[in-house]
Image (cartoon, rainbow, N blue to C red; front, side, top):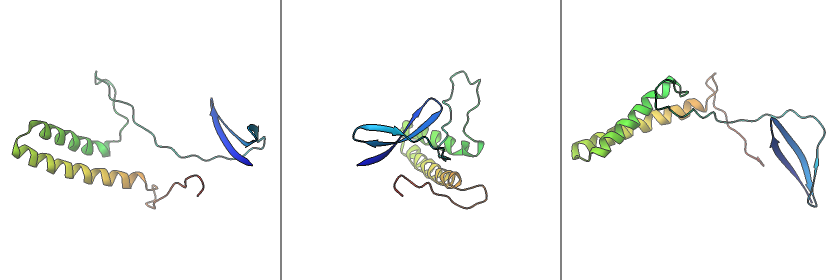
Amino acid sequence: MSDNVWWIKGNEIGIGNLSSGTVTAISSTYAVRYFGVKLADDFTSDLTEESDIPDTYHRALLAGVNRSFYEDDGEVEDLKKAVYWQNVYNELRRAAKKEANTRKDGTPYDVATEGY
């Protein structure tokens, strides 16, 4: 039984066949397309660097911070405000995910998983 295998070493992707515990690399050249999600750098404590998170998502971050602020206070009126900010956060997050999964021409795209 033979299975296709792949690996990453340095800046290269290797593709081969695994048969009876032995990997035979495929020497042919193939175009490989991959999809990934860029993660923003962590915030710094000295505030000298700007976040990689696009400006359009800053309102969602602010809503999440407000929610946490009001939750931590614990007063009944503040808990109502926390629920409000959670709803704002969820709405902005939903819109951000929708925008992130849309080509810039407005049409959605899907990433096909292995075995699709």
